[in-house]
Amino acid sequence: MDTMQDDGATSGESHARTAASTPTRGRDRATWDRDVVAGILDATPVCHLSYVDDRAGGPITIPTSFARMGDDVVFHSSSGAHVAALARDPDRDGGPGQVSVCLTVTLVDGWVLARSGMHHSMNYRAVVVRGTARLVPDEADRRAALAAVLDAVWPKRSEHCRPPDARELAATSVFRLPLDVVSAKVRAEGAVDDPADIDGPWWAGVVPVRTVVDEPVPNADLAPGITLPRGS
Amino acid sequence: MDTMQDDGATSGESHARTAASTPTRGRDRATWDRDVVAGILDATPVCHLSYVDDRAGGPITIPTSFARMGDDVVFHSSSGAHVAALARDPDRDGGPGQVSVCLTVTLVDGWVLARSGMHHSMNYRAVVVRGTARLVPDEADRRAALAAVLDAVWPKRSEHCRPPDARELAATSVFRLPLDVVSAKVRAEGAVDDPADIDGPWWAGVVPVRTVVDEPVPNADLAPGITLPRGS
Image 1: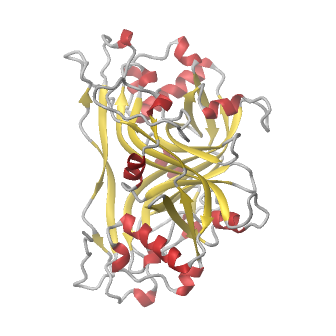
Image 2: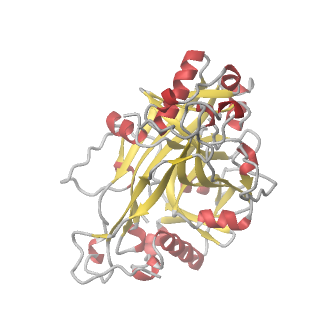
Image 3: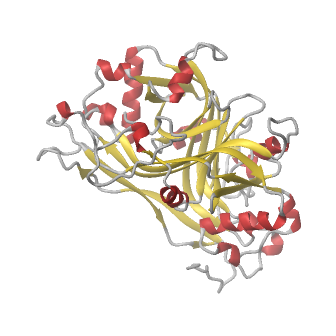
C-alpha cells in the first residue's frame, strides 16, 4: 500500500501540485511551503505529540490540543505530566526547560481504493514538526498561548470563559516549538494504479471522509438563558 | 485545560465508567479493558506511529494505516522507509528485525467547552500501544497482515483487488506489535467545572464532532460497469 511513511519528517524541496502534474508518491509529496503548513495547522486543534520515554527509552505519543502562533506551535500539559517532568529534568541533553518532540497533525480526507492492494492509500493533509519544545517562562506569554489553544478549538473562546487563575497557571506547563524542521504532505487525488492493472475487473476510486461539527449541546447544569457566542 | 496527557502510556487499573460514576480526570480515565481497547482499534484504519530517529535522536511520528489482528496490531511500510531501515539495522539494541515504537489511535468525539479556560477538554477515545514491533518474516503471515490492513479500510476489500505480487511483497516491510503494553482512555461527558464557576455567566457544554464517510467517487479512468462491493 502506498503509505504516508516515506520519511515524513523533513524535506528540502517544495512541490507545488497542479491539476496537470504527474501523480507523485512518497517523499515527492513533501512540501515545506509556509502557507500549506499553516493552513493544515490552523484547520484543527488536535495534534499527536511524541517524546522519548526517559525510563523505557521508546517513544510515547499522545493526542493533545495545540495552536499555531505565527512561526511557532504551542501546547501545554499539567505540570505533573510526563512531558513536563522531562522538561524539568536538569540532567537532560541541552539542559532543563526543553524536550525533544515531534508534533504531527493529520487531516484525513478519504480512503483511496486502488485496483491493486498495494496502491491503496489515503487522501490526507499532514504536517510533521520536529525539534526542541521549550517551556514558556513569561506569564503574559503563557496566558497568550493558553488563549490561543482555546481559540483554536472555538473562535474567540478565550474571551468567553473564566481565564486561568494563579493556581491554575502554576499547575500548567506551556511549551513553544518553532516551525523550523517542518514538512507537510498532501495527497488529494484518485487511485494511481500500475498501467497493467487499469483494465482489470476491480473498482478504483476514493471514499471521501470528512469531519462534521454538530450543534452544541449545553451542559445539564447550565443556567437558563446562557448562550454560546459563535465568535465570528 | 484538562488534557489527554497524564501518562497516556500505561495503566495497571481498569476503570469502568458508568452513568453514576464521579467525573474523573487525567490518569483516572485510563483502562486496559480488552474490549474497550479492541473497540477503539477496530473503529478506524488510521494510527499515528512513532519511532526514535537514529540520526537526530528525537521521536518521529507519522500517520499510517494499521489493523488489529487478535492480540496484535499490524502495519507496514515501504522497505525503503525510515522505520524499516531502523528494523534492519544489525547494531540496534535487541538485534535486527525489531524497532521500539508507539502506536496511537485517536477518535475525536467533541470539543468540551467549560466555564473556565483550564477545564476545556475533548471527548475522545484513544489507545496507546507501546513496545517492540517485529518484522514479520513468513510470506503467508505477511499477506494476511496486508489483507487485514485493506479490510480495516473497507470491508473485505482484500478480496476485491489484485493481491500483492512477489516484487511488491519484497518491497514491503510488515510489522507486528503485540497489545501487551496498552491503555485506552475514553472521555464522554459534559464540561466538569469547579463548583465556584458553576453559576458564572459562561456557556458550558459539548460541541459534538464526528467523522462522516460519503458516497464513493469512482476513478476517472474506471471502466463502465464496475461497481464497488460493499463487503458486508
